[in-house]
Length: 262
Image: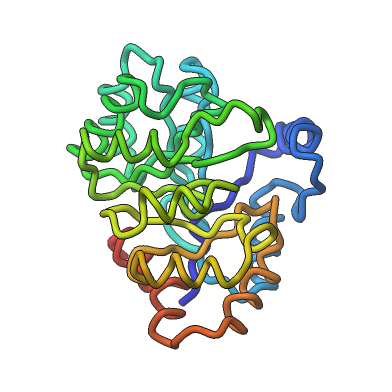
């Protein structure tokens, strides 16, 4: 079974203008139209069995609409997480509601939420999500929105992990997009999952394999960051990579199945 642990989609009414705006930030062309149907067609072409959608509440006021849409996708070929904003005064109630909805986790994006990941507000959110048994996926490393002002560096992630000790934390982009030397120094071997979102467009395969083996293939999750990477191409990269079948099976789906409780 192949699970893509990092994808995005939007309601039909928002998908077009949202992708247009994000494309301006990223300077990239999306590989789907940003809708559920577009994601489903992409994953079927790639041979992916399930995509995990990661929405982002960029303002506290978006909590309701973000999670109402997410709650429509609790099982099947597309599963959505929810999201909270760290500045919300009601984050505990919101996290409890997310769990009650049946969502398995939340997505945080320090750059778009404009809070550094070692801020006490994130520490509180992650700690309470951990208490509730929710998975927490976090954008880590550089982002085109503010490439010179990184809001989740490997150092920040290491600080939060020391203080909070989460067991279901996923750091996207292999722990820190474009900061993989620091990932090797500070995060490899720690109790944290790393996803492969978008990295095969930027990272040397040799460094990926080195990090994966030092960290442990049982803590690496296949991910694309669709629509910002092509799902089929990322599957092809993993299938052709010179790693063991056990490593490949762990990364492509086994680890995700265990983490999601499926």
